[in-house]
Amino acid sequence: MPTPIAHSLVSLTLSDARPEGTHLIKWATFWVILGNFADFDFLPGILLGAPGRFHHGFTHSILFAVVLSVVAYHVYPLIFRRRVSFWVFLSVTGSHLFLDCLTLDTASPFGLPLFWPFSQAYFRFPFSLFLNVERAMSLRILLSWHNFLAISLEIVLTLPFLVGVWFVRNGRRLRREREGLPSN
Ligand SMILES: [Zn+2]
Image (cartoon, rainbow, N blue to C red; front, side, top):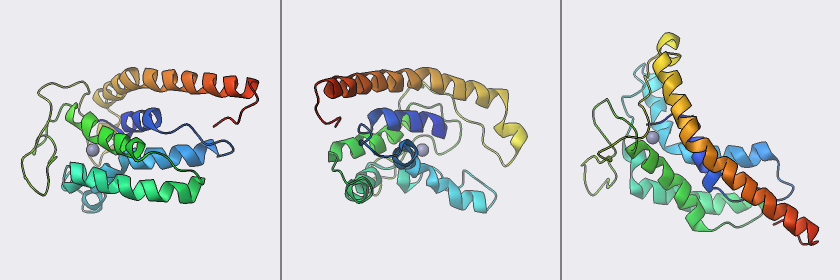
């Protein structure tokens, strides 16, 4: 799996344009949590002192991504008073699986149980774009050069897409303002 940085940057890239008048932090927090939600399967392992123990379980399946998207689709309008296409939510939850399948996996089981509960088989791409992250309950390992390199690679590979989308959205917003139309 990549770090939450790659998942967050890709989620914000795929998200809707921020609704007018909505606080940036509140809006970004929603999409960052949604894009990282599958990795909350770390929590029980962290509590037991073995972070990876339950990682890459059912939260990394296509079924879970669809169910999570349905929930997010219904929760979003309650928070932001605006409807967004279901496909936007599915692209964000699906991007988590996609990025994980593109990451070097050095710990068994290798890959993701994409078709859980219908199949227990694990899947991943035969090549990797992102480096694995060294995980341990030790700051020395978490702050290692390897992890620094992994995070740098993630930023180089994902940030340009977010910057590109920001320019497009901002340009659109400015154009609409010039024409006297509502921003979104
Ligand atoms: Zn994951």
